Image (cartoon, rainbow, N blue to C red; front, side, top):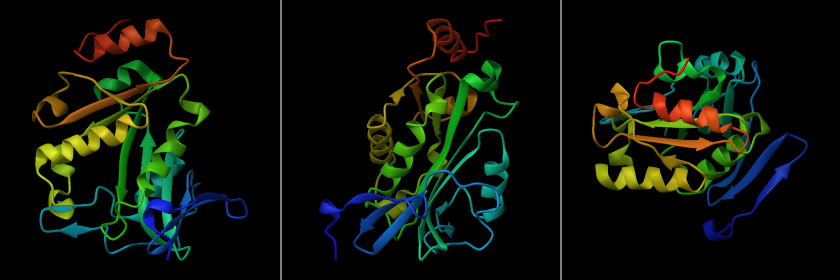
Length: 220
């Protein structure tokens, strides 16, 4: 059995996936799943409802809808070619959200989640790395909303402060930086987290527009 500290990540060209070797066997990471990919899959039991925590996405139909949207991204970690043990999703902000005022400049990394049975195996690292290094995002601002009410404190055995620090460190390794904002959902709780990754082709003007919008100022 492969030691977790010595796992090898390799590209599975035949299946268009990255193989992550874990102590529980290989996990195949599909970094961009197309519509129609999800019909024969099922979610691992480590994703779902628990006493103080519920997975953000619990139905395969949600993946289908995201993948079918404009530039929608769905990344899945599969075992046995059919069991979803991890997922990552991204999309443009809804028209009701503050960040939509900057159009397609803003793109949300909406969720990265790994089954309780497969955590601490670097699966989320591979998934997020594949997403952020896509050329599509070179001229965009990626952002994540770290809402504390979604955090699995019991599953990780962490306090709120410890979980926040873990999330911050994880996203920092992929080029994200914490940003302050008065956006109401983020400002609702002091432990909430807002982080961004500014693409190398984002103009200084667009960066300024974003800085202003963080505090509700819209540049026309």
